[in-house]
Image (cartoon, rainbow, N blue to C red; front, top):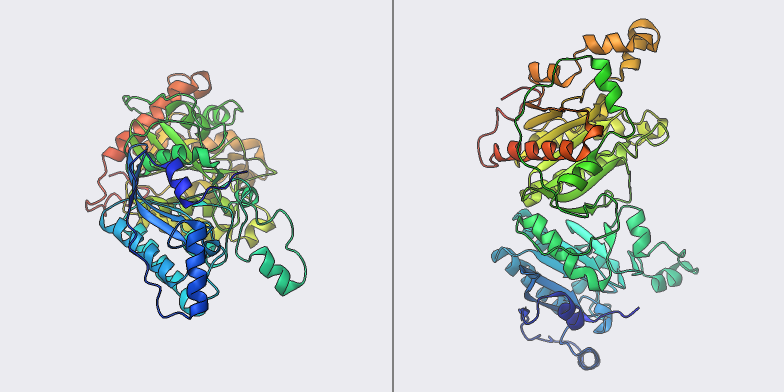
Length: 504
């Protein structure tokens, strides 16, 4: 595979003729003659004056700042001058309100400069954190190889983090590991594809698809339309065509038998969060895992938009939950990642609730499941962006409660919410599951009951059960999400709206 240098990557990614360099001439400083000679030779070989190029460009019409490593210059290593150039670029991007795309390829700190260069990783990270705190997107494209302090600082702070296919990515480079440990690093660990599998990176993206992926991410994160191209992955949740929904009248679901609604939501063909995205989203950019080395397919995290309204979506995926693979602590940590992205980028948060219940295993207890539910609740009630929770189908126990405290809560006509599965409640009250249907009726679990109690703000009717018209169902849900988002304003006094279980 051909690995592109900094200039070639920029040319392959940005709109023709749009790149404008921000780089000032490098002052070499009071280094010894030997190191100065090394720097001059590195510049001649790489065709750049340092190990990074920075500037401004447009990507499919989206303005962005760029920080791109040149591995040909001393292995892309970060010296004092390199760090100063990166910090200056990040700060300028922040001042000019530009999204930032970083494309590191580096062995880490420049050993010739030692500790003074090493500590500059802190300054780079501080600048990136300030950029994100200003509500600006930070995208990272990790190239081969990215190791050491670069990966452990600004290379791991992206809102979206993708990597070059087959790229070596890790904290400790294999040469250093072998030197220190006397044995080779285990194969297949420090590879981009493995890091995606472990939930550390979002996707593997070939270089020739970077422009498409970056443009789609920028469109979703900034709310401006982008040209559509090939998706980040072949994930089946991505829509093949755009089919945005339109607003519909919202009314309480017809009063009916609670057990009938529960049975409908448990049908294997009932549409879930994937169908919501497939039929009603303008575009979908899936994110993967917690970035902490964990994944849980019970939760889907994505950047998306409905009818031109960009948002972060956190959704419980009914298709991947089972007794063998219930919703666990890692899924809730993934949800909290979505909450942080929404808050940092001032984007609305949509939480889709559709779960038969969280994991009841010893492993879940030891993985702090209860604590993660509590932290989800705590973080959601502190968000200042518009938030909408959607009861799409089953809503059982703490797993449902964790995503409930939005400013606005909506429910599908046959959705329900209960502290336990009805069978479990029946077992507590009657010693067995036989009274589940009658218990569900008395517990007021139905969408219409939740509306009457002020627990939800709107019910999206199901003129026919959702499985009979999945596209129409998805579009009505999406349209109501957009309506509820537009009812909110992130700068208003929302103290009343923050009451998670009370109508406003």
